[in-house]
Length: 220
Image (cartoon, rainbow, N blue to C red):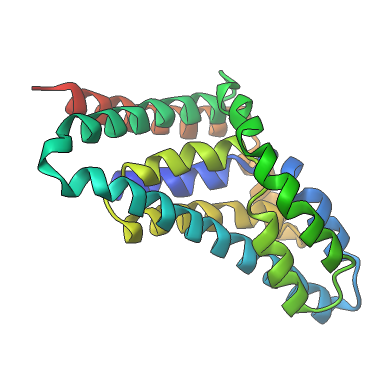
């Protein structure tokens, strides 16, 4: 489980380019509101809501998956979920390393849900207060995202709602340095994470986690 949590955090940290592309627009819009203290409050509120929605989705996925772990006669389902989660870890690692884009192709799976959520988000714009930002972030967290969906499969195989929520919360926390890149230090961190060698190292680390899990999952 510790390896899975580390992988979730790494996926958030190293998936910065993708996260900025998906969420950068609303982050940029919120950063233009009011003075510096208000902007900070709005940005923090937005990210709090976004991470909360990830954790909720993870808890739901973990709760659904836990049914397979509680029933002795569902052992084949447990193994299938576990193996699927390890395969998704490998694909996430390859994506982070810049070697494969498969995880981004599953984003259309949430298109219908986003069509229902988007009008509610539109009613909150422009964001003028931290409370508004929390609500907007909570809605924006349901934006179709290949990385999020890949991690949700891992949450599905985590065995419990608590584990699923923790996995997704750590993923959300990992995305913060890039989405809060407002000062010199944060920008330097983002530049570090975008270096090809760093991305390759982090991505292959996640791949190794997935291969290790796959080996244990397929072993007799």
